[in-house]
Image (spheres, each protein chain N blue to C red):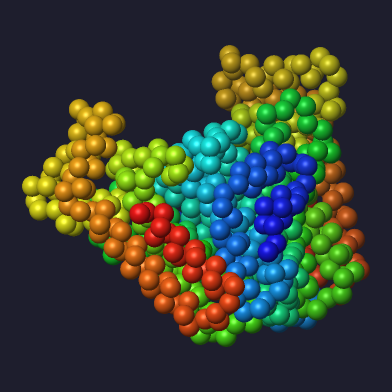
Length: 316
Length: 316
């Protein structure tokens, strides 16, 4: 398989204006799992496609994903990303806005290197994906201001914000490799289920994860009162007394950070929120695996199976 | 000619999430001259092209232009645009960032509606234009932090930030209508000269304009010490004594706004900065008109001539 880190490191930008391009190189060099471009390559491999042919799409997706992180970090006022200062902290907010804009343009530039007869459809998919992510981010910000958010609304939001990019990465790879529309749809659905399972697992690990392997401090979502799968499930399962107790615990000014995390976790324990989340992750994982059964059974399929199964293993 | 205001008003967006789409409708409804889409249509008409065929490009350019204004207003902390509160004032900064991102995606979505066999090249031009504008904005912000900026650097900056969009609008229109590469280049050059003349005229009107027709308060650039064509020309023409006097006047804390504007204008008068600017505008206008001579002599050409000539008339 193509070495994606090498390909991303090989993306070169003009030296000037340095204030525009240095933050882009900095962001792209900060690592990450390169999951999205990998999925695009796997989507193509599944149908015997040429890796080089789908590479522009894979790179465009990675650059676009990093653009969304850059702007999300400004909106969330996040100071650290992948262990390094975020762009708006290291430089300033205007730099983060403008370099982010330029990254989005670079993503479209990479995309435009695709075979001409495939460009129109790939561009249409890419635009739908990009719009979905913006809509998801807007819903996420809206939810922060709202008192009541249903689990269904939450699932719709993470579908847009997280799952859609994985699903379209796979689908674009498959499309470029010549997969028919039904096969594209199965792979797309696999990506959606995988993305949903992935995000719910992230929410679960924020409460029950191991700080060393999770990569960030445990309880972050609890401390900022984020409406995660865990919190929304707890609010749904709780009786009135427990619900008020949970809300009080989240908002009380007399608790220390560690006290708040301990108390909220105790309520989650009582309500079996962990089990509910694990069940939902397992359900989505199974749905994802079912989608793969309708697709060619080869090395790429096996890797996609492993990817889905690795999610479940990561929890237990 | 197609009614561009009607076409832009007809662009429709989903109702939800309202926080994402309402600021986009608000921005697009705020008017403006619709110069860029007009230029795309004129570029096509010049070569007998079909207006409907170039319309997606025209609309994409207008949406992209408005996106840049939206993000520029955040970066410049501008409170008013076309007589209305800017998006980050009326809503908030995060909304302005995210709705701006979505506007850029909408621009690419519109662009993707172009004839499939023209898409690849149009996309390439659009990306070059978009990157140029980001580079221009970065140079503009860099210049604010620098003590010394040369006139050449300034001209390079406004070429990117202002002129390139006009030039590519014309060129994309011509390309879609089937113009050959030489003709495209002449039209592109016309657009560059027009854009340079246009921006220098804007700088001149900030000092010597009539508040009623200029549409904004006179002296705004002087008060914020902006490195305009006027200031950079004055600094270049001044002897050491006058230069220090100019810098003192711009930075002195003891002057009122109107005193500062009066004193700086008096120095400009003494250095004949107005005449220098008028000469440069006339030179660029003539260059623009020369470019048109190599192109088909028809109604569209005549309108482009009028457009260039209207610049010179606006000053006198």
